[in-house]
Image (cartoon, rainbow, N blue to C red; front, side):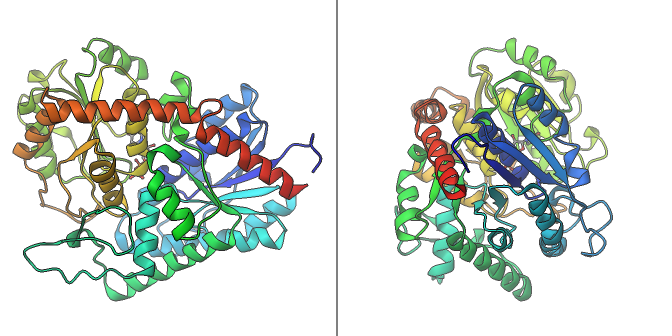
Length: 482
Ligand code: UDP
């Protein structure tokens, strides 16, 4: 490519909000630097962001969408199950992941049609490295999690941890791992033998393609986890990594922030007016991401704990498994908490809320996007990881960054915990009062979180570390495609 010709990059996210949202943000960042961007998705996923992309196009970004069909029936999935977010049970995860290999043929046809210069594809699409190679173009891997978590997973693959700890103490540390990080045996995945080996095999495949791909794009910023960034590069051999986050900061106006992922189920202006009426740093935002669902017994405990904490809150509740709020709200809750608590059913304009000055803390399941969005907003966190890499992210927050306190840390399956309660109302009340209170420890958490928020913003500003990493990545792609 000549200096003047435009770089064209394909973005191929996994079909799940937590993966698609940051990938679209990355595409926007590339487009803002003059790159032509094409996002590949499927019919039922595109509805969540086509308006958003249309607005970007109107504002001059060269960004487009290509739609390929999702082979649900061929892969043994229910009709219309085009996203990890709508999988009915955990035994459908593997068929879902296997279905992704069926995208290879339409993906290659798109490459032939558009002749892009590069492909940025999700970790769950390891075969894209080979497919891209066939056409002589580089593939970049996007994981969508913290470097810390990537390091934990890769470390465990290499040096299977010895967890023969005594029953008194479930805590163990990893060998050859920086920092004295405490892991809990009960948080390691428990799967049946066959499923476990299928997942390990998949993880190995991902790990191999990391090394044969052009490199890895990370939604984080170097200053957040420098020790692990170096460990990942040097000790784990991932020498080509680019830190370009927090990518959520690429959304600058109200509409973009409000309609990230799905259209919010509350009017964003109503939400902002509500927050405007509150004192600075007085409101807790409570949300557990796009997948996790609590049973009614656990929801009752959260409701009562929030009420007795006496702290103002916005609480987002996924309603797929709930018929009506009467099932979990204590009698008279809405009347008593009128003006004090705002419940959002289904989808909140999360980044918009977190960025509001009235928000003083975030109770989160530690999905990486939420964690990083909280960090970017300079907020201390109440961590309540539920499954998968969320436990790693929570360790980063509580043990490395020290900007959060823990509410609960036992595994919760988003699908199969009918009556279980992990965190009682008293525990909810205790952590909320502690985080939002005036105690010395809370002040420390707040001050560290505020500093990190400032550093995050600087990282993406002109000449910041993430800004410069993106510049250097684009330059290297130019050289490669020349
Ligand atoms: N999100 C949102 N509104 C909601 C719930 C989630 O905007 O009501 C966004 C959130 O800002 C984040 C993403 O959805 O960007 C969730 O990703 P995360 O990694 O936090 O968790 P996951 O949903 O993958 O468990």
